[in-house]
Amino acid sequence: MTLVQIAPPAFDIDLDLRYATADNFTGAVIYRQPICLLHPQAAAKLAHAVGLARMVGLRLRVFDGYRPVEAQWRLWRALPDPMFVADPGVGSPHGRGIAIDLTLADAEGRALDMGTGFDDMTPRSHHARTDIPIAAQRHRFLLLGLMAAAGWQHYPYEWWHYQLPDAEHYPPVADGSAGQRLVD
Ligand SMILES: [Zn+2]
Image (spheres, protein in one colour):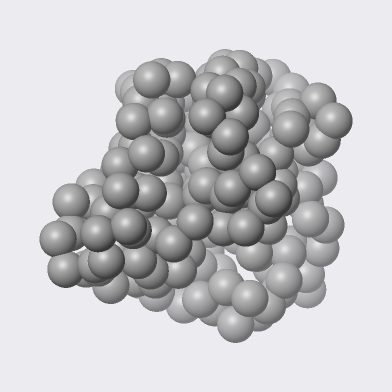
């Protein structure tokens, strides 16, 4: 199974691949290459979401897609809390290529306020929080509705994480089929 690379012009999105930079919760660069990959079925549903967003003047900004298992280990070692980081021994939907972390931006590419940043591993990142600004609540509902309409399933503890239904039916994708490569 070959993963699909998610990048313009095939996908009209903004890429903000945080694990290819030190701007992530581990504080370290993890991916050598800023590459986003998805399972073909997830790529098709992402294309649907991109189209729905464009219709209402919005863009999708992607933080991460497929994640090699070694990368999952690095996240887990930095924060071994299964509410926010999947235990690599169990497996992550990201390792199956069917999960994506993303947010919304306006037509000019300005990220919408979601109340917390990406990978803010606190209860305020949970869905349906009423203690964040009203505008941020609206933005989260917008992302939730748009992604659900395109066939994605939300994760209650992270507003930025979406995955295909029946995630466990997809096999983990072996490393080497993907191009990020990790920083030593
Ligand atoms: Zn995620």
